[in-house]
Image 1 (cartoon, rainbow, N blue to C red):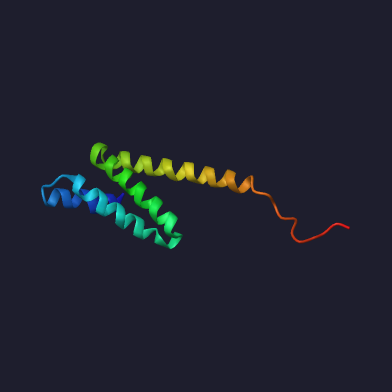
Image 2 (cartoon, rainbow, N blue to C red; image 1 turned 90 degrees about the horizontal axis):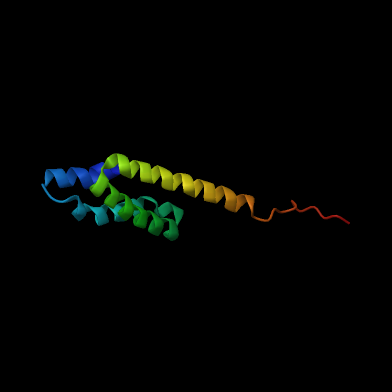
Length: 96
């Protein structure tokens, strides 16, 4: 919430410019913040940042927060099901 407000809303207001000018730069920074998760996570976060920035410009901060929360929830559910359907190791014991 603060990220989007600080990097899109505040500059747009201070410079009397459209928030659209700040969507891609803020999305790139959002991706860089997630670089510790690897290149794929960073790219995913950048794309998500563009989507969230667009939602912020069109519908406001609350809508962007709701979309972000929904994205995180669906990601957590998907990860849970991916892990629960993965084959489990027998722990190294062998039956004779």
